[in-house]
Amino acid sequence: MAFKVIEKNILKASEDTANENREVLRHNNVFTVNIISSPGAGKTSLIERVGPVLKEEGVPFTVITGDCFTTRDAERIDVLKIPVIQINTGNACHINGQLIKAALKDVDLTKMDLLIIENVGNLVCPAQFDLGEDTKIALFSVPEGDDKPVKYPLIIKQSRLALINKMDLLEHSDFDVSFCEESIKKINPGIETLLISCKKDEGLDGFISWVKENIKIKKERNR
Ligand code: MG
Ligand code: ZN
Image (cartoon, protein in one colour):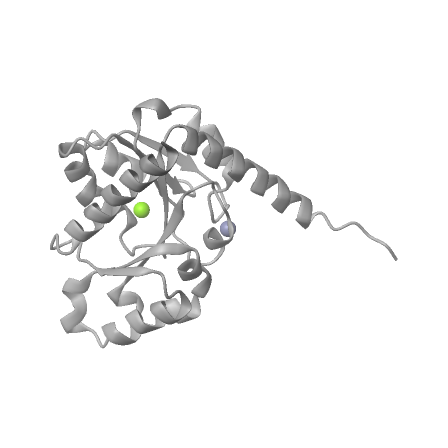
């Protein structure tokens, strides 16, 4: 019996919206990152740490943060006087392109150089959804174990940068840094990996330089 498969159409619609977002962001020179990690790996902590530095250095940016139900992440960013939009996805375990398109209506893209999207904490499906970003960022952390890149390779394939957070906990753990870094490189040879600790404020200079360099590259490319 012939039956209709609609999954393709949904993915196509999502892809079209992502392309629209990408075009708007390109037109306005807004370098856009989509940070993906499991819950509790430190996405919000990363933004809390680097946000004030970027602000201090005069980089105009906005944060879109995704969570199923709460506004806890947005509140943490808002107290730092960083512009933030909360997306509540309800029971959905990822942000999609349509949600980003709606959020972009509330920001002045002409006054921004950078858009940071904090996805819903989940290593699986956020990797499958293009939001129109320049790149995803894969964020792992020491307590999760060193095998997460091997188990969730799609995120690595789609990211230009991988971060390994909570390096301050390394001494209490059997996390093998070389194994983790090597597995990341094996999955995506072009990726850059940075070891960081948001808690101890270590390695974050590298992240800030990476962001600023990419903002510059995007502007030069569009000139
Ligand atoms: Mg968070
Ligand atoms: Zn999902």
